[in-house]
Length: 119
Image (cartoon, rainbow, N blue to C red; front, side, top):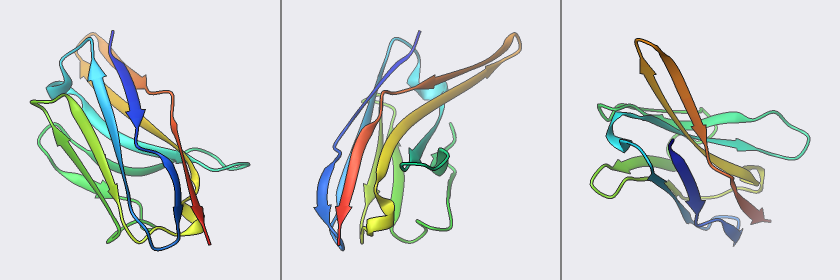
């Protein structure tokens, strides 16, 4: 069973930066496709950025050019560097891991970390 623990959230002014981390344990991190999602109050959870096992990345249009997702398989850690933050980036950010076997797929979630951007 994989456990995911996020950290690095907080309060920042618009234009500032934060780096989120997601530490994985209990499984083989290197075989997980990883992603960051976020959920603002009253809104559905949305994909922010994703990175595959091979290192390919994709981003939501709203964060392209401002956020960078990366992974360090040696440290079993996923990162999200967030620059030029905007008030609309305020949300709870969740780490997500997914692996697909011939027997089925498994999805794991962290508990979330709050990011608040003040104007």
